[in-house]
Image (cartoon, rainbow, N blue to C red):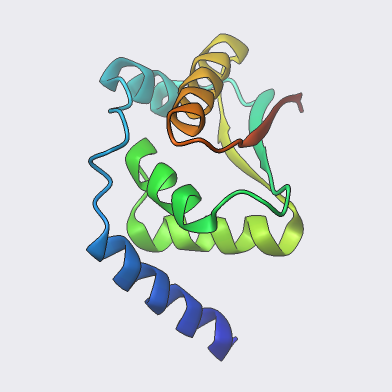
Length: 119
């Protein structure tokens, strides 16, 4: 557990040094749609392919609206479990979020595997 805390602290320092400004803003309308959705029958899953830069994932999660600490926790769960559920909402809202994630990954010459699941 101590190693996880040390890794989290190191990533926070790195995140603080590298701005998330190079990522496009998530539309406020999309964020509000995700937050206000009461439909929990669909989920967006992020899958760890072992290649994607974990620091980029943390920055992306922060840009989506998670705190730095929560972003690091999600990234650590992603790395440990191989996948993490990022959001639950209507399928069309999750498709828009998936498009945003894919666009950010493409802009930064990386690939992020995502899947929309019926729960």
